[in-house]
Each structure stands twice: as C-alpha cells, then as structure tokens.
Length: 151
Image (cartoon, rainbow, N blue to C red; front, side):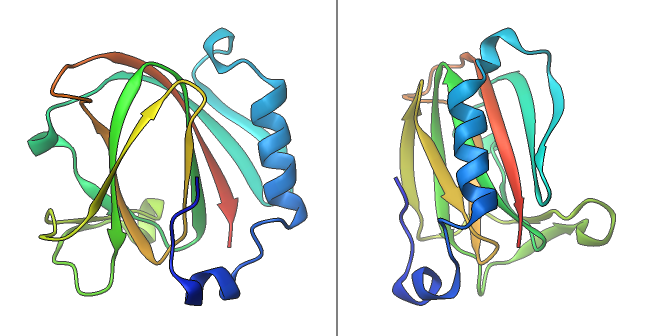
C-alpha cells in the first residue's frame, strides 16, 4: 500500500534501485529470526529490526524525518499506524540535527492504517507518521522492520 499525493508521486521514483533492493531484502529475510539491530542493504538503504510492545494511541507520537523515507514493514503482530502531511503540524520536539527525527502534536486530521504480518507502509519525508499504536486498543508484541531509504 502506498497512499500519498499526486505531487509526491511525481517527485520521487519509488521504483529506483534502492527501493527495489529494500523490498527484495524484506522478501528474502525473515525478520522474526534476525537479531534486533541494523542491517545494511545497499548504498542509500538500511534496515532496522525492532521488537516492542504497541502502546495506547495517546502514547504513540507522530514523527517525521528529513533525510530518509521509511518503509515500515510488520513481520509479526498487529499495529495501527497514523499518517498525514507534516506541513503545518505543531512541533513538540526537534532532534533532526542529532538523529533525523522531529515529533509533532497529534494532528486533528490524519489517516489511520491497520497493519498485520506482511503489510508495509512507505512514508516520504513530507509526511508525518505515528507508529507503535495498539490495534483495537490491545497492547501486543510486534516484530517490525523499518527500512530507511535515503532521499
């Protein structure tokens, strides 16, 4: 699933080599059997295997990045995932200089996507996203791979 705007669809090539190699890596590696941590994929792309328990909606924060797209792939479990355009959002914490992440107050308008094992979402730098939220309010352990693809 890729949900975006027409202007962003024209701006980025979602089928360039580093995206293709990232999807191939996801297909050829069972994240549930990998250690948590970083895995280099190719020039301009790496994967972060994560294990955590989802949190109530109110505790999941909206975030965005300037230097990377996120391909957020759920390898195990269920998760709700918010997404919206980041323009005009109220900043609550800015760590872009240190670790390419900025956090926002929960916006009034956003889309929520429910992810299950095998689902992914691609988030460009112009969008904010809210990972780690409970699906139907139930906290659950998940295994997720966040592939970082350089802009």
